[in-house]
Amino acid sequence: MFLGQAISLGVACLWTATALFASEATHRIGSLPSNVIRMVLSIIFLAVTLLIATGSPMPLYTTGKVWLWLSLSGLIGYVFGDYCLFNSYLYIGSRFGQLFMTLAPPTAALFGWMLLGERLSLLSLLAMIITLSGISISILSKGEGGKIHTQLPLKGILYGIGSGVGQGAGLVLSKIGMMSYDIPSDSTPMMTYILPFSSTMIRAIAGFAGFFLIMLLTKQTHLLRSAFHNRKGFSFITLATIFGPFLGVSLSLMAVQYTESGIASTIMALTPVLIILPHHLIYHDKIQLKEILGTVISLVGVALFFL
Image 1: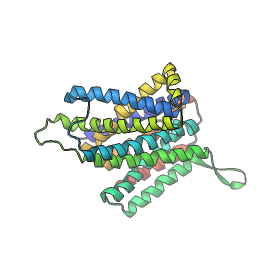
Image 2: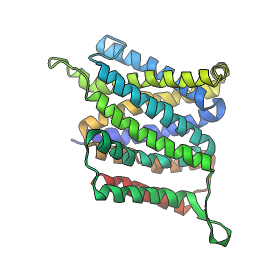
Image 3: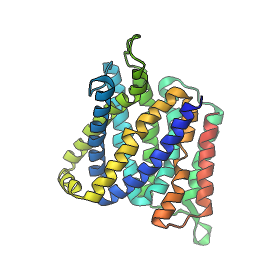
Image 4: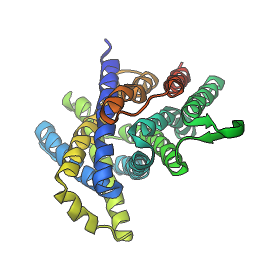
């Protein structure tokens, strides 16, 4: 009865682990190498999964429209969104990086309104303001003379905003792509369960192409060799891949098949709260009351957004 909600909660836990592992990998081997390796590993894991489930390592019943929308989703969600997310880890850490991910549901609703004609009410606009207010409470503080300033570097904040916007827009594009499959009416029920993994496969292929092209253009491909020789960094990015693009992203697409996307998005947005305790235990950072308050307010905004 609550399968979608249970999957969504599981996704929030998976993304919490992903954020911690990805942050460690990024600090050891860099943002671009981490993302390229993550995409390659995702493609391998997904190809094996599809081969076992459908007999083919590539997605079945796809159309040109499916590849177009899911590839765009991969470029915006992975290449832009995750590039920003991984760089935000370098500047502000995984805890604050995940806080900015609360921007994803409002962004998804905004793009859903623009691309799918989904409803965007006054309550939705109020929810956006509350979400932004929560983030502001967490990252702003008063300095000398009562002047307001950010306790985080501007680069980290901009990367954080980019990550939330990229994830939200990518989710809507994924939804359009998943609606475009040409699945025969007599297909096996397995296709319902495997469709999210097929969609993630296409997104991962586009993500790999985008990240690798950036490395070529910026002449950073030599960093891949040292990344593969960094055992700890490679181990962390492997774990981040399993918990993130392979299981987390695929199950997030599965969750919206069993419950309303608003409910699923709200539950999956719990990651900034779930990450506070493990981040404190691992890094021994001081947690301020206003940071917890700001996180909770952001999540209230996300929840209000889908009433």
